Image (cartoon, rainbow, N blue to C red; front, side):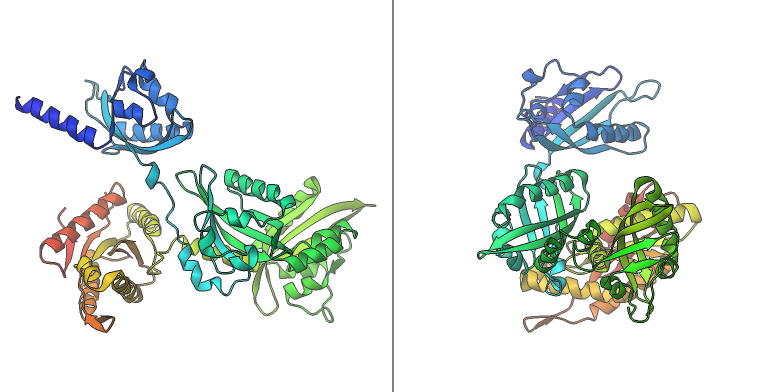
Amino acid sequence: MNKENDEAFWLAAIIEGSDIGTWLWNVQTGETVFNERWAALIGYTLEELKPISIETWLKYAHPQDLERSEKLLDQHFRGETDFYHCDARMKHKDGHWVWVRDHGKVVTRTAEGEPEWVAGSHIPIHDEIGIQSQVNRLSAIADTIPGMIYEFRQDANGTTSFPFASSGIYSIYGVTPEQVKEDASQAFQVIHPDDLERVAQSIQDSYETLDDWYCQYRVTTNGVERWVTGYAVPQRADDGSVSWFGQIVDTTSEKLVELQLQQSTQNLERAQWIGRLGYWQANMETGELFWSDVIYEIFGVSKDIFTPSVDAFSNFVHPDDIELVRESERKAAITGVHDVVHRIINPDGTIRWVHELADLTLNENQKFFSGTVRDITEQKLYEKELERLSLTDELTGVYNRRYFVEQLKSVLHKVKERGKQACVAIVDIDHFKSINDQYGHAGGDKVLRKLAEFVRQRSRATDTFARLGGEEFGIIMSDCTLDKAVEKLNTIRKEISELSFEHENQRFSISITAGVTAIRPLDKNIDAALKRADDALYEGKTAGRNRVISAVNE
């Protein structure tokens, strides 16, 4: 057996043992070659897929993913990327979708420089597609919020669960967080039979459209029927699952009031939908305005001394939102509905968010708006907090990798377009595995939290400090030369080495190693700068750790 055959044998053995589907594609002719594993990933044999061509891939790949795949292939063919890489769904023989990681590279080109043969592989990644939950951070505020806050998840196959729920779930559904962590069916069992289908449909609608979920329904626990109201913001993961982050509260009192007023006018019926909701009526010709009692409270004025009018209302509207309100009023002339969310400024300077919803009525050459205004300030605060949690690291409270990457892209753009100076560093805790081994993961977590807070306090307001994963952190230093970055990092490094850490009455110290590089206008993307910083970090580790290495000549 000669060397060439030896290499071919071992290459085939490695591919076979790695559970990898392989493919060859002649871009010019469409000729395509797959191995048996490529077909098996979607439940077929090669014999079943014959005749095989590039159309085979096009037939089984998800249409939405094909568009992205074609764009990425074009970029690779033009030489903009070293490799083609795309995560895509393929239709399995059984009818479901499976995720594969599609890698490839042009291996030959025509005499004219056009791509000819492309070689690549398919790796199954279905199990690793998912969203890393951030909801543990919500536990710090859970006890201060009425009802329950939660993460509700629906997988692509319809399976539902509550990966996170505050202890308030017991007051809503009569179950503990642990009982529904993997399977939400016990919560659905207490929903009133007459409301169950409507609740399920509202969840499915939000799943498909990614519109915010809002629903009022009845639950029965311990023989007592109560009304609850839920609001949540959905986020879709790459595997097709959707997670909702939101709140459910007991609104029995408000709902009973609403039900008692069903015999009243439609305006009063709408006004009692949920708490912090007031009724108003405006004559747009005379400027007269009627407010229910709740609105006086929302706007922070006394009914005894304040007389509402259309002009007086306008004075409350935030200057940046006044045109938004006027535009909604103009649209109402066409649609008959005035529907706008905006800010108001109370006399004490407090800014609140309100949602106005009203019908327009034309009567004897006069225009009347009749509707409701709802204080949604708390809802906006919840939304902002949920957004913050999606950008921060659960353990340390500093920014996470997702936010770090987005900020680095923005900084690279400023370097390219505006000639700004900036640096990026990767910081790693030396011998962190030994810390975990000696003091346990609880001790290691203490180190991560203390170090993160220490560095965060020493970072400038213009810096971005994030945990990238494990014991690795990243720092983006805007408006900073490489020399200044090295000086700053060395100061932090020395101060950290002097810190004292303690776990279970045992004291110890740590050190860090950092690799830093200037972000350059010629960097094609952030990966170029990150690679230099990572290479410098590796050099520092190899040289003995506890040092800062800058990428200067690369």
